[in-house]
Length: 386
Length: 130
Image (tube, rainbow over all chains, first blue to last red; front, side):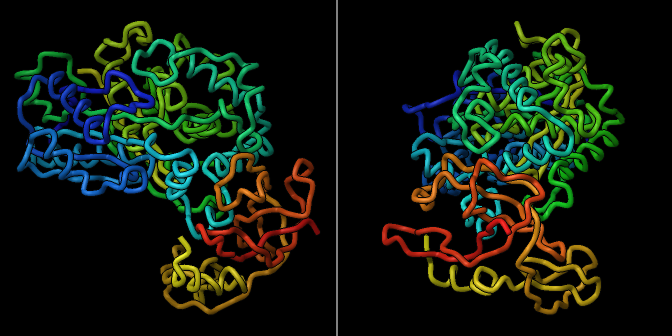
């Protein structure tokens, strides 16, 4: 297996409600940004991470669409879907293709165009990541499912309402330093605690937003990349993915993200690293409780102690291990299919030392964790500056 | 929405809570499956779920899907039925702000939602405090 490097990264100029941009424009803008950053004029293959172009804008066949509008025909182009972890799963497919020797230059992009539908239609589209016949049928929404996890975690471990809020406060503080972020402003603890209830105990400021956006990376064999790279390279040390039950109620322990724990164990073994080696991480904070449970499953904090991490400053910039320096899904935005790729863009930017005011000084090793549904799918990548 | 075949094929579960019990390892699955994820067996016998259980966790949906507009806000929980099978269902006929983990509940056959422009009624089970 060949070593794989990230040669270039790309994002839209801004994430949010991109009314003037179509699904294809959003993807192509980020892809062109990544191609320019990598300094390459061709690719051998490309992936499109997207949860549901079909339900948001009635468009499928996204590999073909994006290759056409990026002008890369006839290279193979494949859409990868794994709900909110579509981007992470696409990155893993690109990694496998380069590592195997099948292709040398691979574009991995993720995209979602979510604001062309009403809030009710968006809620319905996202609920398709749950068990439609046995969860969504009963009226539960995604905030509702994570609220079930939050309630169980609070009951079992004593996690507090304020500890949930600290996750949002921290990530908004980080996101305020990210010009791409949809909501680049700070929020106070009081604002989170007094925001409108969506699904008890979760409030609107516990939830990531509806976002249009894309992200892209260019992958290349590390040895070849060393010869022509114009910017610092980032090596992908590990790529791992694991699955769990689609329905939350089928899990033995609703307070534990088994798929994330499994993917992390594989990734740590593949990288020869452990949670203590990480200097920065981007994790799937679709709701505040998610970041708390993910930190536990990644072994960054002890099981049941995730609530303390944001409140103590451990996971803030300047803390022991800054988490979601980009602002996370909460502040940067969550265009579901793009998120997993955007996490890799942020970690690569950190490891290159180009993160500006939100730079983690001397960061050498970073991790991304991207999750689909209530944790039915998890993808973990580990990266190292080279 | 409301494709008749899609609704009809779930009726044994929605109306009668029919589950599948693995004849090899004894685990019960709801809905029934073709292969047991525990032991790999492909033979099951039909069983009916118990209609009482305990609330493991719950939430109150304040912003609900449009098919549930006439019911919002409403409580939803995960119930562990006696015998061990867990399901997601609404908790009704209760004060939604006074639920507690561990609350004993009983399943009742109810209207779940109205689908589509015609408002087609769809049924299933909700739980009520015992």
